[in-house]
Length: 252
Image (cartoon, rainbow, N blue to C red; front, top):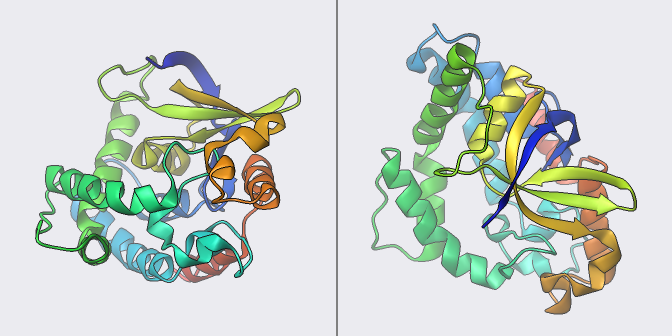
């Protein structure tokens, strides 16, 4: 069972891409903040602003491999894996396992939020259909979270029924956190400028143990690749592919 960490500073949070959790350099935070003005605007107006940005994001994401998504060289083994199957060097599943595990989970999640994807799809077809049809479903989640937080404030304790879990990344005495679950909640937090969030501990990732990380030991990441991913995430260094996405989003 995960352990409640209590309140963590959002300024210590990091998002994949890589970035500090904010509304200016983290794509999810940027898209949601630009679409959400206040809780009285209504879902239709939110989607009108959100969906064009989401389409840009999905078009960009569909072109990425795990290697480019993490800012690794084209010669990386991960260049052969689509970005939607990404997992971190310390992740519990390999990229190959993610290609089998994630699509059915996505289909169930989208069904819960009103977007029914046929089960008669290959995993790649399912993920493509999700990218083309799930914008309104994702937007509704973002809007309802922003609306709820704006009206009622953020949760002030850990939620055992739907936990918000994070990894604590440690490098010597310094630390930061990176989300394990709750991308929609993190996007709303970033968009609204929330300063603290309650979270549960998924695991502690120490840079000094890099050789023991599961996807390093299994050969998916070289030591140098794993170190780069950790350092870029830890220090909030935006990788080239994400810079291209941000350039596209800033046109809105």
